[in-house]
Image 1 (cartoon, rainbow, N blue to C red):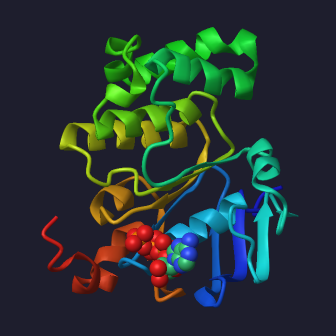
Image 2: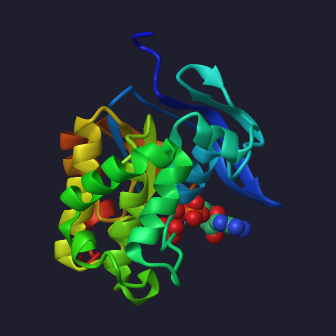
Length: 240
Ligand code: ATP
């Protein structure tokens, strides 16, 4: 119902073996809403993304999807409930063509009958993929592969999307393409949690920001106040 977040983390602690990465992190993404998770290297941002998608099970605290406790449920079940995680790096089958990658992903999510329409939406949103539909994915540039990994999930309008460092190492035109994709997903009602080092771009596509440092939330508030609030600690000296 109203007021129930699409995704919520409640006082989440997480560790890798003896190494403790998160200390009581709470955040919520409203239905169709957008939250940017920002912070320095090693702050625990990717760990938050992995907790949300079930790849890392919290040692304490809870994960809720649409108000339902999914803590400890396997990642495939969380995915089936509509949360899609686009991890850092490239998640494509490199020996398959662009179109084969899209078809495989769409068939698994929307069934064979939905594939044609999903392909049309993906090519309309990302013309670079239409131009290269027959090309082996492994021969695309890193940026084009990132666009492909996003297109694989966006055409099926997930309930909630968690994207990790989508713009890392991308040419500016590809950064524009992935952020246009995120904006389109939000317009279609997908809730998004954006993990980014590229703070300005992330803040432009969300409503709220959460700042993480050393596994703890150090600031939260409206996205348009985030840069001023955290100031040079985040944006200074990065040479972005
Ligand atoms: P980055 O932007 O560098 O990816 P981050 O904010 O996403 O940073 P995480 O990747 O979540 O941070 O890492 C948080 C801490 O957990 C870091 O100290 C990191 O070294 C550690 N860590 C991450 N993944 C693992 C792992 N698989 N095994 C052990 N430690 C890990």
